[in-house]
Amino acid sequence: MNMKKNPRIVLGAVCLSAICMGCGSDAQSTAFHDEMERFYEGLTDSVNTLEAIDPSSENAEDQILGELDEMSELFERLSNIEVPPKMADRVGNVDELADDAAAYMKEASRLYHNAWHNAEYDGQAVQAAQENYTRAMERVNYIAILLQGRVPEGDNITVIPEEENAN
Image (cartoon, rainbow, N blue to C red; front, side):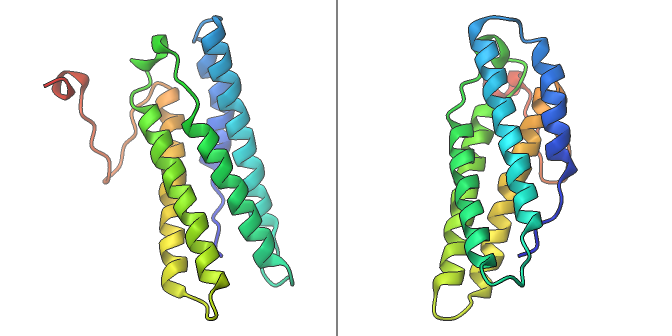
């Protein structure tokens, strides 16, 4: 499996502390900050673990699938993190992005398991799994960008201002 290094995840984790410092010191904001920090730390650890797996080792498949299962659980926890109401206007649709990221990571894990546990290697399932993995990681990067107070940019991104969204 080709896992690319993603320095934006580390950047997101580092920037999160500075960003959420401005969230105030109420219990909801503190809980949100702590949960997001745990998520990004866990994600960084998981990505580093995946990158450290020797694909030629005898138990590489089990290690990769196990780590993907852990990432799926981590992303599920992300989808359950509640954005404090006083932050909701500033951070856009983080809740929706987190739900999407969790769904994509769950599907990536399922497809990788299917691809490697069938009698024959299923290249199409691996390709679909990689696409879902990439989409999950993109959503996490968008979340980091939104939490920094910026707007994600790119060819596949459409930004709908709140005024238009209300119609």
